[in-house]
Image (cartoon, rainbow, N blue to C red; front, side, top):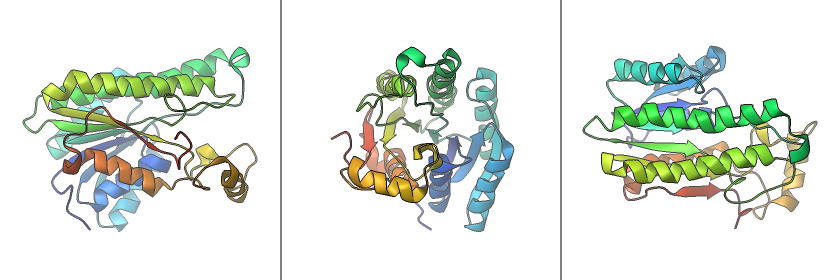
Length: 254
């Protein structure tokens, strides 16, 4: 185990599966104490169990990031448990796609904005409020997407609009709070080896075949590759990286 994050407390939202789970495990493997959060306890407990088997330290705290009192409680409990909050990764998000703008259901539009944008805003507010009042400041990484500020596809306008907002919000927040000692960046993955990148009825093998044509790299990214980008942005090696949006998509948005 590396010691790069030994003594640091890390909060990861959306940590019950996919990128969030891998990010939480990666921080724990490098010595951090990790709070894994999401709306449902069972998958979070699975993440904590995996970290424990790997020799790391993690706890579950459930929270709905679309509700500001729950987010404030999440940060407060994190500080109570570990004494501070050094790093936060806002990974909670949802995808809705498959319909053009004219047919986008209003409930899907609100879901996409509530979780992907408002959830990030409320998380940022609670995290920054803590970090700017502690001597060491902190680092925050938002999980955005290559869909949005970087590239577009048909049938995903709501998700594209939401993730473009995350990318813009990240840069604006970074400028607002770097003087407070809070360093904010984003990672924008393309298709990743999770269920979110599978089309309806598609298998992993089907997706692999499709990506040979759709991705310049010829494959989806692994969650570990995305996690590596997150850990870099949160690390001391990225101390002068502020307001960047690091695209990890195999060249799709190049």
